[in-house]
Image 1 (cartoon, rainbow, N blue to C red):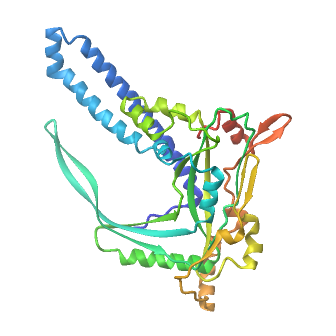
Image 2 (image 1 turned 60 degrees about the vertical axis):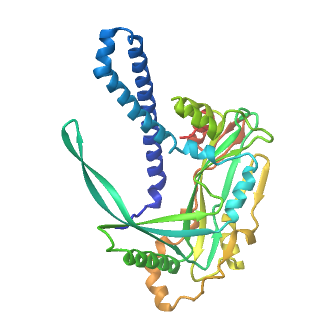
Image 3 (image 1 turned 30 degrees about the horizontal axis):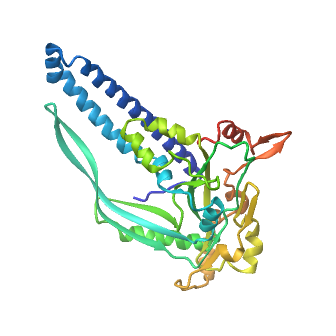
Length: 377
């Protein structure tokens, strides 16, 4: 079984996942508060012998068990949130331009990961009833990198231009970054599909189910980053330590709201063009893809990344030009080839432009983000 992802639906799926995660976080937060209130209510009557005996024998024990279970899940969920990940990767010693330049210039590595697994059924006895639970048990994990000859960054413009007085209360930008592999030609996609199918076939039959996933690696890229946008400023209270503190005392969601009021939120997709049969650092490619070279616009700073910095060639990959037969058979994958005019729209740049003294975004959604202090969607 292969785990396939439709790139067109990825952002919508991620957004739905994040939305449901926030709902669950708030439900657990409220249940923790309710459990705490119940414990305080019980404690008021602890010196009444009749009620004390009653609670200790029944309700009091139930409240403790309820609060303990809810609190445990609450802590687990809170430490698995993007908020905690961003705080762990907080950067005070690197500027936004330095961070993005590092990611734009580092090459992409595409990894295939294959899992062999089965489902294990366990019978648990709860209150005299036998309840079956199903768990996924992974028995084997194999990985392999997809090799290609040449790569080139085609992420385009990363822009965050704003009036500094407008965001004077903001200290950090919270980057939600992802990496995407694009294919320079149909032959490359054909090679990619062949390598993926062969790797899946090699790992089938070791267990009941086989699942293949794909991971894109770029050195320096983490899914969530928190980068200081105010020079020589490290505001107190915004750190992984304080996040953990508020999680433990049961007020994580309140702390999250505070952090959000101090951050600008931005999503961006790093796109790397790859080819197995042709070099992408030629003069012809420079002319073809020049308009999609990565560039950074941040406040009054503008940076165009040098072409020789964003393209790379592998010295470990043995280059072989495609035969006529390979070219003809790969034509069925023409729709998978990188199309600059259709596939290169990040759609997530927030660019403020002055309009009669007011700053407005690219579209209505951007304007809503500005009015709400650049809070996440």
